Length: 295
Length: 155
Ligand SMILES: Cc1cc2nc3c(=O)[nH]c(=O)nc-3n(C[C@H](O)[C@H](O)[C@H](O)COP(=O)(O)OP(=O)(O)OC[C@H]3O[C@@H](n4cnc5c(N)ncnc54)[C@H](O)[C@@H]3O)c2cc1C
Ligand code: FES
Ligand code: FES
Image 1: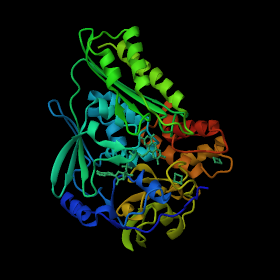
Image 2: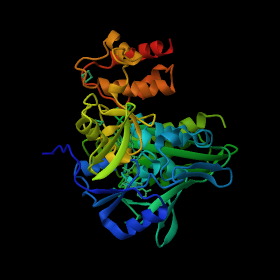
Image 3: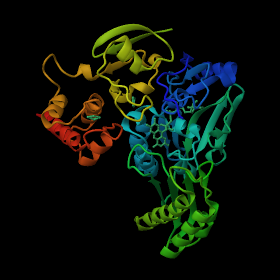
Image 4: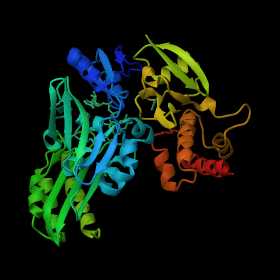
């Protein structure tokens, strides 16, 4: 039987006002500390006792500049770790240069949650259904991880290691997500399937991104959410299309490859066979949308 | 305990709070403003919606110390004396409620929606209220109330 907890367990709260201070707190408390961004995952997890209560919650929201959203044609987009989903989704820069990211974020949760939650927090949860993940995978985002010992850049393709598991160590923070400028003649689409239109997790999420040279696909990137222990890139489906034209036949082939590769869980939200079938349908639909959009 | 200063419905408060208390607990229990409801307690239902520095948030997902220095509006802050806010008036006239438990949250979400989008499309109304659950009405009258509120607020 599940127990319904009304109160949070005890913990302490600190609000560092510089990155150095935050990192030294994490260095000191290690596994006993938990970074806090929007709290829209952390608070329900801790309240439901799904996650052990941290000794101290380290709120990152008072660190200056961490919520910046900047764009530069050569460097691409940089999302500060505290940039909220609502601010990224509505950013004119994001809407203009990365419409698929803005659209993917709109499918998430509610206005109240989007006002607090961050894109970085979404990635850090590392749940297989995290809605920003497939899009960030096809846009080939790079994460900047910082600790007192130094910093490292981790491509998002190497970030997730399992359900709710990442390469982040206890004393590390993500400070920014860098997203390269999409090449000219590229188009991307994220499609989310969930039983309800709002406030529901993806049963399957598919992101497709295609760069064309004339009619042929010179770069194809397909990523899937909610069908494996982590969000994944789908290499077989990608190579099925590479160097070909987008036609009903080639799209069909890529969609079949995507669904034959996926290894989803079988749970109360959807059966394994259903998820695989839906990977096929959504991959085909996403690629067809890309094909039909004028370049 | 943590010392915080918050402004609620225009009134400043200095409070001493437990670090693990939520803003919802502070509003309901420390300030006695029980118009803001607790449904699920984990961000799913929207009954606890308040406006913090101009944005709608789930008060059950905000820690009390996170609210330090913030300006908060709850359902009690809308009416001016006996005069209802146009949104409240619209819900009352159209009958956008049955048991009323979800209503404060619905009205606060509507407030945030109309502040940003005074003339929302049908789709924008649905998106604006997607984080608020109602277990009674079936939503049709709530939706109509929001439309009417938009009309009234512009008059
Ligand atoms: C009602 C509701 C609906 C939701 N719907 C969706 C949905 O449709 N799709 C979806 O994908 N998710 C959904 N979520 C989950 C959640 O809102 C998102 O994953 C959100 O993006 C988390 O961001 P946050 O800033 O709130 O993270 P937090 O809860 O603050 O943090 C999440 C985790 O990441 C860690 N963390 C945060 N920032 C950093 C950092 N900079 N460096 C290192 N670690 C960090 C925290 O310690 C914590 O473990 C929903 C949640 C709720 C409550
Ligand atoms: S009580 Fe806060 S969203 Fe349900
Ligand atoms: S009126 Fe009863 S829950 Fe909405």
